[in-house]
Image 1 (spheres, rainbow, N blue to C red):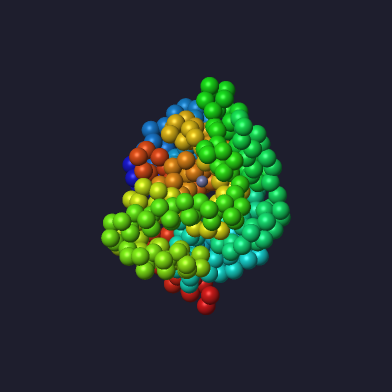
Image 2: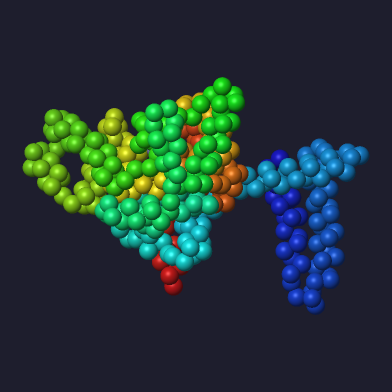
Length: 343
Ligand SMILES: [Zn+2]
């Protein structure tokens, strides 16, 4: 059955062939019509839906085409991102210079939010001070909602869809509530630094006690400017000296680097009920997806339909039955792709 979508897809491309010059078009068109018709029949026969009812045939063919779309390889993240940014009159290097190792890593780990629709993604992937964050958050705008005792804040469209998701969940006697209070949604720059230190400092103590780092190294790491500190932490993690809460994985899967969080972008919401598959389904229906590998309660507002995520440069990775939609950069040399585009 694998070849069914390909055949149907070929058939669908017929309309594009009609744009060739008029001199050739009649001949090609006649042939394409014949071939196309034959392929359509093959499609319908293979899916076993040729019946007396015209409507059924149409809907079965439609379903096959939809399946074909879903089976397609996800688009390359950097290409989709470049196009999305062009519409916003900016370029990848303006928001996140990929020659900078940390910036590039952050873009590839948290970058899904830059593709979000009907909201304002941040103008840079690393904010370096509170003033920048405040200006961005004021420009993008946000609305607040009281859930229990916690007031959470998100960009307006993200909030609107969260409210809808909650209503739907509550109709089914479920709920969607913020994890760790107000911090589940909007955060400022200082929050992101404090949370970084909540992972960074205990990890330093642990690795010092384990003898994997010495006092001199620890003191030096503590005194580094933040960006350099992040870079060195990521470098240490290459040798298994991890800084996540449980010290088993990269700190970036546990907490964002200072100034980089999707929470700063007001496009993230940490959900208490993330383990419930129906809750995840309802969130997805309203444009909210898990996009940061291993950060289980963390959902990102993308404002897209799940079926459209692959063509938006994201690929689904399933971990313990949960699907994470992450930038499709594996196996690509993104920096060389960027070089090519510049030429
Ligand atoms: Zn989060």
